[in-house]
Image (cartoon, rainbow, N blue to C red):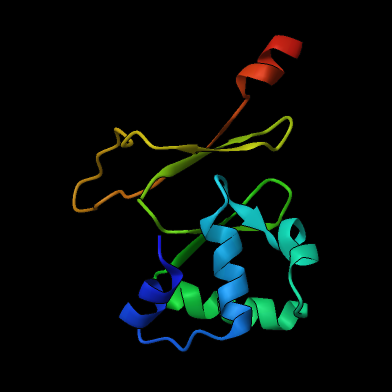
Length: 123
């Protein structure tokens, strides 16, 4: 996924801060919260969130809140759902299409909460 192409298509100026955020999110195989990436960024929290909001407005980045009350972000490569373990708070991407039908709605993703296989083994 080319960061320059993404920002050009959305007509967004590619600043150093935006490039740094997108590089981290594009290269991650899981959603990340601010705390996961703050040490890799040379910017304050306000700058991070100002840019994330812009990315969300332009549908470049999607986000959701987890059990730990933190907001997690990822680049929207493909629409998919997430599983959040209620025991260990691990987040996993689920790439199979959710089998949920609601009359008059298009379901793109679902946040599923439950107990992951590792926690089930330990419990």
